[in-house]
Amino acid sequence: MTTSAPDSLQRPAWPPAPPLVAILRGLPPADAPAVGRALFDAGFRTLEVPLNRPGALDSLAILARLAPADALVGAGTVLSTAQVDAVVAAGGRLIVMPHADVAVIAHAHAHPAGLRVAPGVFTATEAFAALAAGADALKLFPAEVLQPAGLKALRAVLPADVPLWPVGGVSPDNLAAWRAAGATGAGLGSALYPEGAPAAEVARRAAAYMAAWQG
Image (cartoon, rainbow, N blue to C red):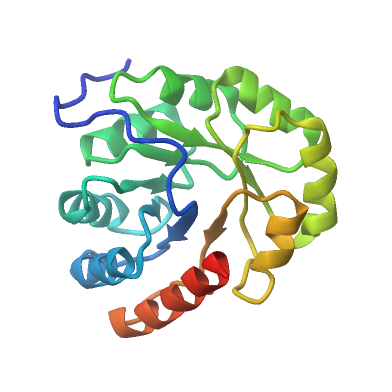
């Protein structure tokens, strides 16, 4: 059963700009304020805290409270409808999944909080099923296996306005190749935030990604 969202939780602008998703797996709640500010100061506006580490919802809640008005904060590795509701309760508005469970996608899509949902897909079959269930973007995962050539093939058959975000192995050095193949953004994990990295290191890595995207 879905829960009512706070009045302040409005459907965010879409697509996010810049369309780079910071994946903060294992972010300790104590580090969340400094790491979050470093990313926001670098220009990031989309942050995701995967739920498969301790303290994830606490870190998400901290990031949601300090996020700028134009930022989109949410959770990754969301595997159930109950987790969708827990993310909303923590202040999240973005649901990212490693898979394409249509029940979870539909629940998030219909949620009164006005969520955005980006399920993980690898094939055209998964992609079209996810879109039919209400996906707002497609997370191409694992991108290091798919490679830009695989993304280009999917882009040829998918609706032109569907955001495609490769996740896995995306670096500042290969970001241009992903964009040339049809990526409209990207999810950035351990190459941006290695678990436990200090805020100053995250800021340096964030600047490199933003320069690569803008360049």
